[in-house]
Length: 110
Length: 114
Image (cartoon, rainbow over all chains, first blue to last red; front, side, top):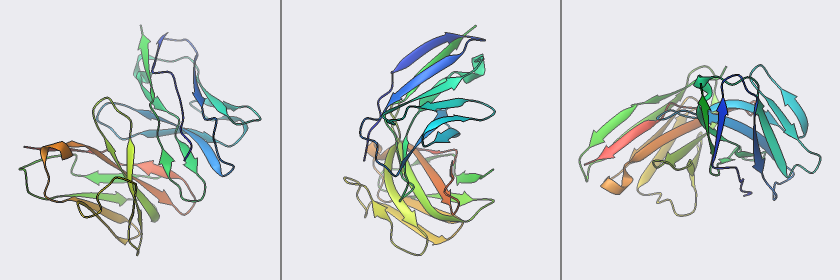
């Protein structure tokens, strides 16, 4: 199964836009790109999912280039409560498995 | 949206005993459920895939006789950690996949073996 690579950590300030990148060079044709947020001692919470191009929902945008070897999660105007670990596991289309790589710890400062 | 309930949220047990963790899909039928384990400061590691009415499929390196999974209905999967030892102490998380393909995660169970 393809693995993903993300920056280990990022810092930001309240009100800024944050972009977190994820590399998945060996993504399979049937794989979807998903992003999750996790707070300490809680299960991951779904943020967004996409296959190609751009997807936007009420909390984030997901940008996926044509080759699908990377993706970028964009969080507009972050707040202190967005401090968390963000993961970009690939969703295997056939089995529904989510394979997690190391996430990105986002620290939002006042 | 899809809601998954996991119980208990934390448990402390003595070494050598068994612990059962429940994962329920509350508002949808989960044809497939997944169990993950997460050690401190690490990512989630997939342990097994649980399919309703059939045997679970375990990931490489996961002992099926130690981590018993039962998925007897479309809304409930259980993970039993048998003969638990301190090295089994971890955060166990389930996720449920409904027929539509969406997935939701439980809130996790903190297992401490003393």
